[in-house]
Image 1 (cartoon, rainbow, N blue to C red):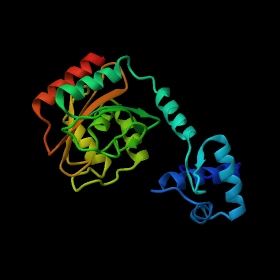
Image 2: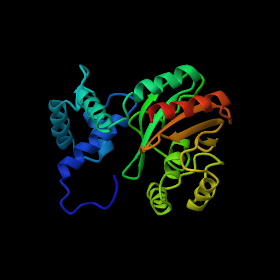
Image 3: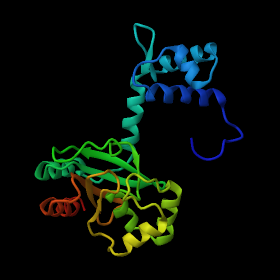
Length: 243
C-alpha cells in the first residue's frame, strides 16, 4: 500500500486484495482458516472472499480444499508487461546480448518514478537476481540500470525519483543519500555505460546504458566485482542496435 488511505475506500475490495497478497506470499497453498488468521478477517468473510476470487479466476481451489493463485493473476501480469511499449526488436536484442556475452541481459524503464524491469534474457555467467526479474520494481540508486536512467534526467527530477523511492541499503557499498548518488553521477556523462560494483548485491557487478532517444535502459550483470571488457563492448553495441 502507498500513500494515505482514501476517504472512499471500498473495504471489500481492500480485503480481497489482502487475501491475494497473503496467498501470493505463502510458500504453499493456504486453507481458508489460515487466510482468515493472516488477514485478520473473520471466517465467514474469508469464505465469501475466496469463493468470489475463485469464481473470477484469481484464486484456485485445490482438491484438498487449500487455495493458490489462479490463472487470471498471470494474465494481468502479462498485460501489465505488454502495456510497456518496448522498443521494436527489444527481445531479440536482449537474447543476442545474452548469447554473445553469456551474461544475463535486462531491459528497464522508469515509470512514474519507479524503476521497472520489463524483460530479461538469462545468461550462464550471471547470478540469479530475484529482484531483477520481469515485472518487478527495483532500486534506481543501487543498480546500473537505474543509474543510467537517472543520469538522463534533470537534477530536480532525479532527486524526486530518489527521495520518492527511498535509498535502501543493500550492501555496505550502497549509496544511502541523494548526495552520494549525485556525487557518483557527476563524474559521468549522459548516454555512457554506467557500472556499479557490489552496490546491489555482494560480489556482483552490473553495467547499464540508456538507449539513445528513449527512456529505456539495457543492462547486464556478472559474478564478481568487475564487468569483462568484451561484455561492456557488446552492451554498448546492443544499445546502438536498439536505438
